[in-house]
Image (cartoon, rainbow, N blue to C red):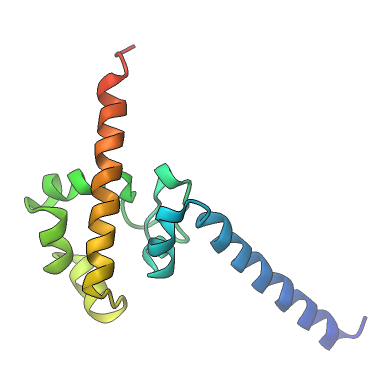
Length: 125
């Protein structure tokens, strides 16, 4: 196979693999908005079986409660006026319309309640 053709084939395979990962990550419909908006570049959502591309941010599964513990504000307040690194990310790299922020807050709030109920109902070892 000529070198140029082989390079094209490898590039197409790489693109297919990348898009396949994105589709596999988004199989839970609740995860789709996070994948589409780029959250999963840095954040996993283990409850939805979504792995982060770079895994540098906290898992969003418990973000609804975690933000309160870390920053002392609700997730809603944090997403509308972020602190720390997220302030820079949301200002410069991620453009989140209000409707998407509100959807994410609802999804993560419901997820948090389910996960907390699961944790609370599990007897200690």
